[in-house]
Image (cartoon, rainbow, N blue to C red; front, side, top):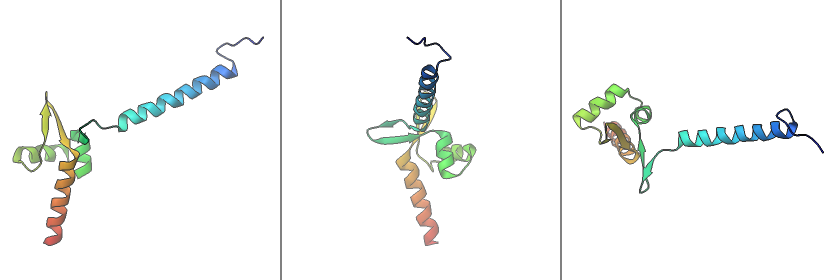
Length: 97
């Protein structure tokens, strides 16, 4: 009968497998965006990155009504469809000029 302890190969292999599994779960959790009724939402940082603007510009666009947003308990989120619509509108506007 073999004694299994923290230095045995089977425990090391199991530990490595668990580490890979946890890394995969963490990556999925970070990449997952909250959604409601099929609608996905973006944070300030994600919206700014998608639009390639600063957080300050995003705030100015909110203040001037350029971009729709939702505020829940101080947290601001954007519908992904609104961001895509904004991009499409300004893309088409630029092409017409």
